[in-house]
Image (cartoon, rainbow, N blue to C red; front, side, top):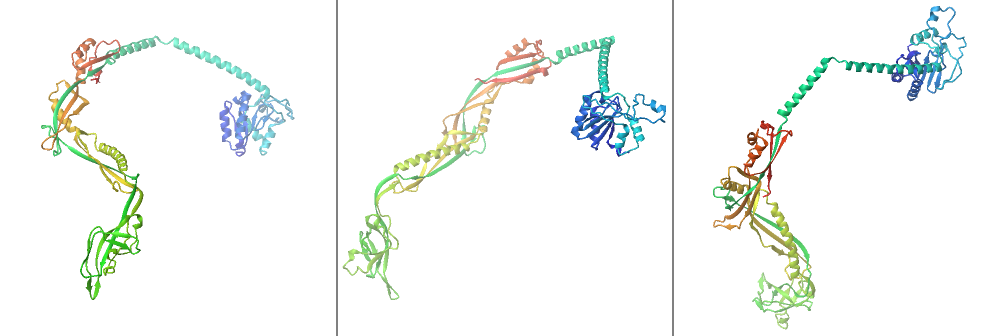
Length: 581
């Protein structure tokens, strides 16, 4: 029986749609039977059944709804609502059993129901409880009926009449509910009007206490004073000299001496440039030859301009200086000629004289026994012979390249120089010196060349001092001259160096003009104590007697307060500097 009851769900009289849907969701069976009492809430309105139908469709469930109503079943796709008539009792049934169901209609065995369809799409069919029970695996009819009898209360009204009855009951219940709400509202207002008089006294006491608290807060807590003081500045000029010495390792405040730092910055720029000069060039070829003496063991002298003719007989070279050729010597019975290496020059300019290595004769000795015994040979080709228009490194090329490279080198040098000066040092401008540019080229100006390379180097040197060292000396000198009620305005010191003088020991004497801004010294905490409790008029008089104050702005709060709070913690002072000087 437990397995058969898995698809049956018994509904309480007051159970609502969400609870029923939740039970359907939890039921694993696709075919589900809902057992609903006749006065159940869900049957009050046909809309509830339509909602149940929609939920069944979404859950893909086939639901059979059973009630004690005599109406016909409602069947629409997934949901079937079937009103079942209780089966006819046997003749031997007790009268008490008949009295148990006073509203049960005693129909004939046919159990015919009306064929009229309702608005909800009701289709009537003939059915009895026994038929339904038999469908559930032919269980014992009496036992099943008893189980239903325990769970439901039967109703003999047809579904259409019952729906109409439900609507009337709903209207009646709604009206009763509204009347109940009205009665409750009247009771609530009556209770509010009949509060004991002691509540009024407590409320009045609370209001009085609150007002006193507010008054005390205004009188002792809220009053405050905001005072803005604007101080004027004044300039204190001062002139003195100090010495910057490279030999010093630390500052000498007493003698106004500061260590001098020197820096040298070297920057270079180079570039390749084409030669643009043009000219006709005639140059003679030249080279070295070795002259041999096989004629005599005594030295032989040849004079300047002596001619040497190439073996081919068409190229003539000369010497520019006289030369002595050593005599031959005998070594192990063999004569070894004397020899000397000399430089010769072509007799005419031109590339034709750039000949390969060859042998030479001396035309001046022709017809003499020496002609065949004194001769010369070359081991390398002659070179340098020119007779044509060529490009050369002109003066204009030099100037153009120099201007470009010097400008680039100076810009680089200045950038490198500034990068070496940190924020904590001061540059002594008069010590800054830029050397003359150093220029080098790989080709001499005027020489034939297709291009040339130029290199420019610039060196800049200068003297530096630490700003902290200078400020230490200035502070020492100014503080002794400073009035007691004045102080330095922070970051307001200006330096102007004069012309530098080089002393006998190599030190640098530097005149300096200083403009130092001063302000009146104000102790805000002490000032609060002095002005606490003063009236606004007294406060204005007080500030007018302090030199160095340009203006004050006094703001008292609340608006009716006419004096400074006696508690100086309630006084706020801000100080502003009017740095217009």
